[in-house]
Amino acid sequence: MKQFYLPFFLGLRYTTAKQSSHMVSFISRVSMAGLTLGVALLIVVLSVMNGFDRELRDNILGLVPQASVNSYQAMEGWQEIAEQAEKHPRVLATAPFIHLQGLLMHKGDVEAVLVHGVLPEQEEKVSVLNRFLLNGRLAELTNGQIILGGELAQVLGVSEGQSISFIMPQATLGGRVVPKVKRFTVSSVFSSGTELDRRLALIHIEEAADLTGHGKEAVQGVRLKVSDLFDAAMIAREVVYNLPYGYYSRDWSRTHGNLFEAIQLSKRLVGMLLFIIIAVAAFNVVSTLILVVMDKQADIAILRTMGLSPARVMAVYMVQGTLIGVVGTLIGVSIGLVLALTVSDLVQFVEGLLSIQFLKSDVYPVNHLPSEIQALDVLTVCAVAIGMSFIATVYPAWRATRIQPAEALRHEV
Image (cartoon, rainbow, N blue to C red; front, side, top):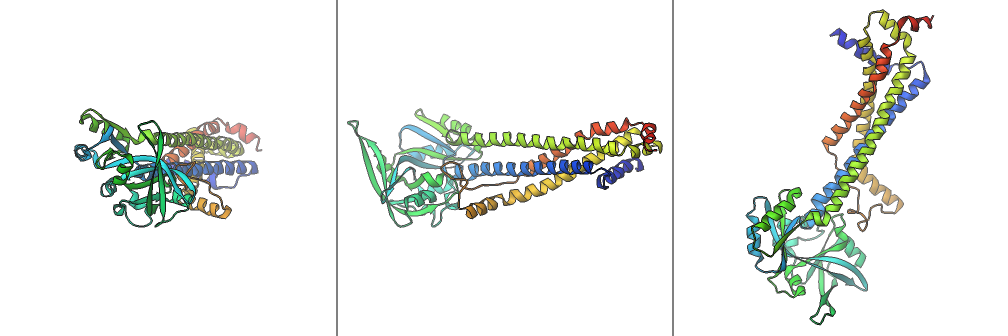
């Protein structure tokens, strides 16, 4: 047991003791600071990327269809399709929909918009919109009413209770395009903090069917809520496989798949770059320990003459280098966790202080900086940083074993 503790205590002593060389002390602090900074930044960046991923999965994909069954023609008798879809064990709920594209106009202001015609009582089963409504519930939506995204309402200068016009182009039999206009009353506004706040509106499905001219019972498709987002495409195909000819499936990967891939790619690339920074900081331990070995040659020689084996001398400096990595990593993790927990509030504070908005929903998928700490990411960063620090100690520690006691002590006399 004593043989195990001796290298540890000597390594701890050398780590905490004041170095005779100011250069050694400076480089040791720099290497620890670089490791701390790299670990902290990596945790913050990974947490922000996880936050964007969460916003996509929970908010954006909670408002738009995760998967859907569509028809090449107007779909009548959607109830039968919904019943057939709900027989699939991985389909949690269904709801009919009609998607319309057009313009919203209020007092001369015009904005392009995607209007979802929904059946409120069914839509509540597949959508998380109620979480974001400022007033009321989705089930209270009736004919003649419209629900707008918060940014869309702000741009148009319209509020609850006011009227707004929806303009939809419609082709006639003669090939002419005639605008179809319908007025709605704003019943509520939702604020999800995503890009949908600027381009999405919801009306009752009967109003949407009237605008399409296909009849009140005809819809465009049936929206599916599935148990696993990443299997949505396969689940939708399996549902369509059991339906007659004329139906096809769509899923979120076609509408927001590029966004998800961009988030994942950014996470991998930025993570790789920051891991390289950690590697550079960790291998600064090599320089630190080489200088320490040069500074402590006399101590090494005395330890060798007292009977300390080369393996235990090597263990002393490996302990010292690893302790530098552990301390730097733990400090970096602490700073990174604090920043990751407060980064959203910090960004909002800076935005308010400078009166600017860094993230806008017409450019980015969300209008705020989300953050989500995942334990696996933190543990991975810790393991990699400490592992690199340990590997970096091998060569300098081996160099310490090559010192000849007689040569080292001869120069000290």
